[in-house]
Length: 320
Ligand SMILES: Nc1nc2c(ncn2[C@@H]2O[C@H](COP(=O)(O)OP(=O)(O)OP(=O)(O)O)[C@@H](O)[C@H]2O)c(=O)[nH]1
Ligand SMILES: [Mg+2]
Image 1 (cartoon, rainbow, N blue to C red):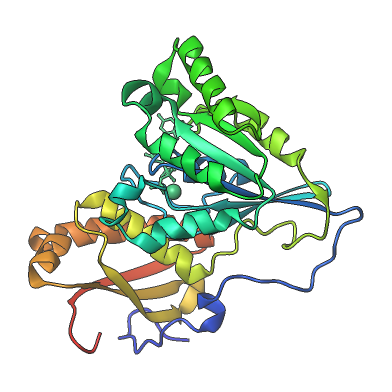
Image 2: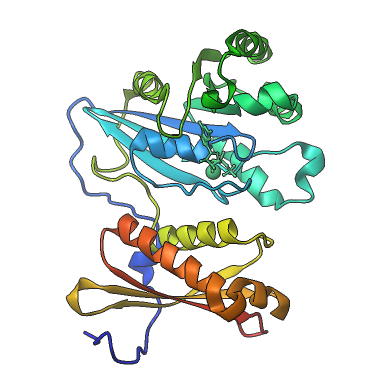
């Protein structure tokens, strides 16, 4: 095992660390029940925060910036004989804005719907009241075209931001119930601490399971690989720290077990121009140093072990 003080000749993460976690050989409980639930909603309404709350673990990254979630993330809640799978998706936007964004991102969200038993349509109460409902009407248009019509729950999140506006929100909820008659319930939540309505939502969702085999063992909270988890955390810290386009690629160059159970992770952040490198590195390396420190802490928590993290900013060449 390499000594921490020695130079590292690292090899990148192997397949076990890169591939989604699938454990096939586990014991099914008696009377196993399961439900697949997809979350859908505009960017930044709190979908990932809600998923993390529901499964009581930080499986999906959250940030102040819209379009934080870049691909579908599966989170798992298991209680007694029931298992609920949550598919957290990237935020959807009106068709006219799609060209400005990664088209695949939005398509991925709608595709996730096809295979689900129930939808959570998440909205930001504050935005509903303040800024009209452009994105929301787009969501209803798409839901209207969906066949078959999947039962759904309307989740009005960020209720903490709109105290005392209950009547107005109820009116909006009623209107939405008419637009999509398959809503079975409206639940008002606040996903940030102190949480409101999350237990009600969890109980409601656990009541939707039907007889069927579990897909994951009880202790598993997500299907994300360790490397994906690490890269998500770094991405969240990176884009949270600086306002740069979502174009920086990550390449893992080392995943090395060190002495004392420390894991050393080497990641390259590949930018497409030297100007961007300057911004990411910051003056005297201050920006990348902060990103590294914060990421290291969060990765340590996520993987439950001590981490040494090295982030190198590289400018894209034909080779990388
Ligand atoms: N005040 C308040 N803020 C919230 C609540 N839920 C989430 N947030 C914040 O809203 C921001 C966006 O949350 P996310 O969970 O990343 O939102 P998202 O819908 O997953 O966003 P995308 O992945 O970009 O589509 C974060 O800063 C959260 O802390 C809430 O109930 N109240
Ligand atoms: Mg998200």
